[in-house]
Image (spheres, one colour):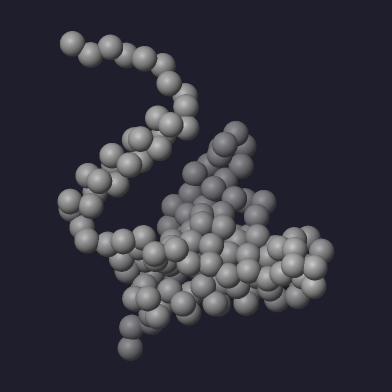
Length: 139
């Protein structure tokens, strides 16, 4: 017999993640390879950065951030280009990310990303966009 227990802990979240990763590894042979770039100011403070990972054929972009004081200087464009190029060198042929309606959807569209799916009323009255882009253009 099994007993149900409430558990909102990060420990449960991490245990479930570990079990799912172990299960998934039985079905494909792909490792997550972390990837990131950053810009620092003269004092060594972070002013912009991007992170994600390559997983099989995919670049999965997690975060792209640029401090408001550094915006408009092409840092985000440079970061995204650097991440995409590094991912291509690691074997990625597609890129995926998500962004919110008040964030950077137009920026990503200018870079060739297209909305594949959107969640409306997220989390209450906004929109979350899931976007993809081919990194290798078929010849």
